[in-house]
Image (cartoon, rainbow, N blue to C red; front, side, top):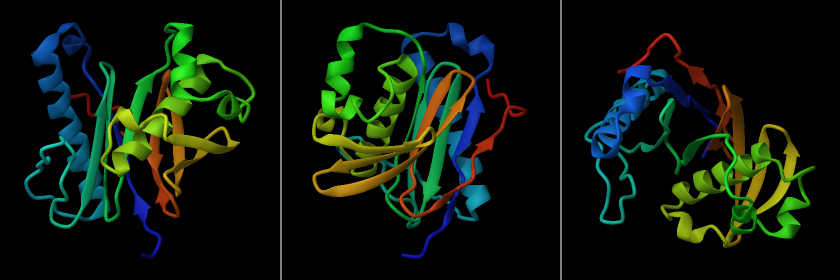
Length: 196
């Protein structure tokens, strides 16, 4: 398939909703993520139909288009693509040091300059995006291996002999990763569209 341009959208979440918890919070973030998805579809010039997931909670194509979304309390992100796609967002914040070894092997850590939290979340979101693209959850984390870190915005991964090129954006203490492969990425940051 010919290379295309993808438009991943990042939307802020209004501060009023940061205090919600449980099902209310998840429902709200899911709704806002779908608004981001709608913007990505508009930018891509595609019409999405009903958004459904299969029995494994993997997004089903809509009108021949793949879609992926991710959300955190302060920001959500979503993208539409003609190809299998995965996107993930995480806020960079310290956690227990023990999770470094759960996310990457010593060989993978050697590909970067350090084991800082920023690097940890680059690795985590890159792997999550690749696993979403193949419809597998974090259970596939160990089989998903980082094989190159060419620069501060790209990571190359291998999942069961399939290569994934991931582009990353650092934005307001968040890392967003998208499977780009040979496609072009034009990030859409919609700060003026605060969703509540």
